[in-house]
Amino acid sequence: MKPLLRLACLAALLPLPVLAAEPTTVDVYRELVRHRTATLGVDKAFARGTRSYVSSFLENPDSQYSALRDDPPITNEVWWYDFVDSLPIDAANKSQAALEMLQWQGGFTKARIGVDVVVDDASFVAFRNGYVAANAIKAGVDADIFWKARDLNGAMSTLAAGQAVALQLLRDQVRSHAPETHEARGIKAEVLARYLKETNPERLTESDLTYLADLLRFALSDNAFTIDAKGRRQLPAAYRVARVAAAYADSAGYFSPGGYCLGNDPRPGSPQGSDAAEYNIPLCFVAATDRAVQSWFRRKMRQEEASVHRAHHRPDESDRLVHFWFNAVLTLIDVAGFIEFAEAGLVSELSTEGVVTEEEAAVVDERATQLSCRIRP
Image (tube, rainbow, N blue to C red; front, side):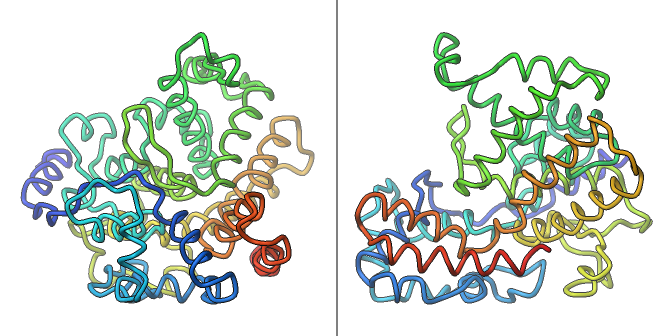
């Protein structure tokens, strides 16, 4: 049976998703920070760290393939339903809709075919592989952008992933705003057009690549989900980049003859946990959480960055741009999974609005700064 047909049959046999609440586009995490700050104060609102937060949503926070908790403690807090009632969510079950949004924003969901992601026949064809399609669709990247970024970056799959997401961000801006407003908004549609027409990576200009880098840096620093031109919510940028890199890995295949998936699950006996992390072994990406894929991406990025250093003892202009992308843009993905950084950014906004004092905001920011010093040398 041909691979495409085999995966199509697999998708048809997979169980349908559990009926979920209508997806909301309300930034529930942002509102959660506001609510907890107003009702508990800064000291109590930000007493928990990343691990505690992750443990509230995942059965096993140390597993790349952890299932969601059936009983997330956050929904049993005395303030939860008051918080949910305050949200402008139009859904029959506001609590479930709010919870699912926090799971989505926090990187706790997966990309299982027919469960988390709908992969239709056209997507199978466009992405040439069901697993590739599932990851790329979860990342919200169109097929033409996906393949062009890979073609122009060769073996640098993490760099290609970053550029693919930047290009998609630009395309969504182009589609969402009238052409006569582009100049005032700083939207350069011509950058997208030039990139998609290019066949020689050496002809990509510094100005175009810097513009794309700025788009992605802003999205990574903002750490928020976005709404695309079709009104669909997209993951925070760091998880989108990681999912695209995972799709590239799936498109290239592995040394393991059977791959790393069996249907929507990791193949029995495949390395998991610290074993997979230590040796930078690819995951069954569709079965992994967004956070796990992001963690894999960070190791893959450093591996590719090191290969550039080894290959070029006398860097030229193109190498300088590559290093710029690695060191000034993609490095932001190192910290994207830590809630301390998200909290610091949101508390800074609250400080500007006068909701918290500058001294209180400084305490939260210091916690994030101390953490960043331990992440990357």
